Image (tube, rainbow, N blue to C red; front, side, top):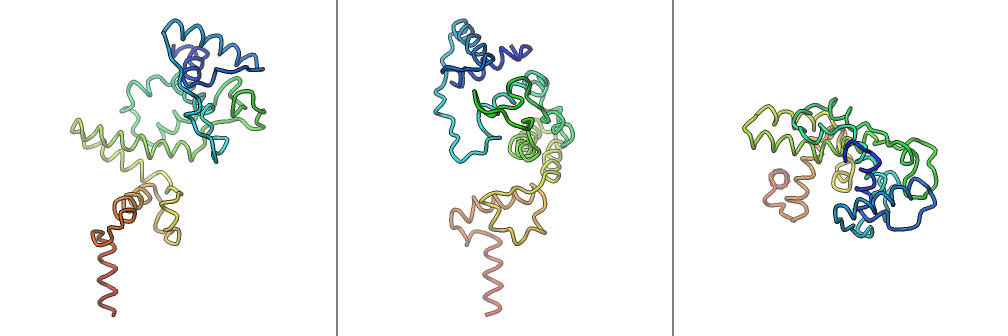
Length: 219
C-alpha cells in the first residue's frame, strides 16, 4: 500500500492505536473507516496508543505527526528503504528527509487539534538526529559486514558534517564548546560518559588517569 498515501496513513496510524475514537474532522473519520476495512482484511490488532508517551514533549515531536512524516517518507522515497546503502552523503540523506506532510497533517500536530500557523516539516535538528543515530551506525555496520571500507569513511564523514549534539550528556562540557563542534565530538563524549562517568570508572578512563597523574606531579 506504499503507493497509496491515504491507505498507508490508515494502516500506520490505525495499527499504532490512534484511530480508535470519535473524530470531528472528516478526513480522520475516512482514515478510521479505511483502517476498519484493512484491519479486517489483514486480521490486524492495533497497539494501545497509551504506549506512546507525550509528557514534556515538544509538539513537533508528537507521535502522530511523526507517523504522518514517516508515511510521507515511505510513500515518496520507497528506494530509501529498499536500498539505504546508496545514500552515503549528508546532502543525499538531507534531501530525502526534507519532507512536508500533505493535507490534514500539513498543519496539525495531533488528531482534531488546533491548526498550526506554520507548515510542519522535519527540521534540521531532527534530520541530523536521524543521520547521527540511525544512518551513521548503519553505514558503519554495512561497511564492516560486507568488508567495504569506504562505508566506514562515509559514516565518519557524516558525523563530521553534522553539528554537535546538545543534550544532558554533552552539556557538562559546554565550557569546551570551541572544541566540540561536530557530532563526531559529541558522540565521543557520550561514549566516554556511558562507559566511564556513568559507571564511576575513573581509574579505567585514560583522560581521568592523565589528569590524576598531572595533579600528583604538581603536588
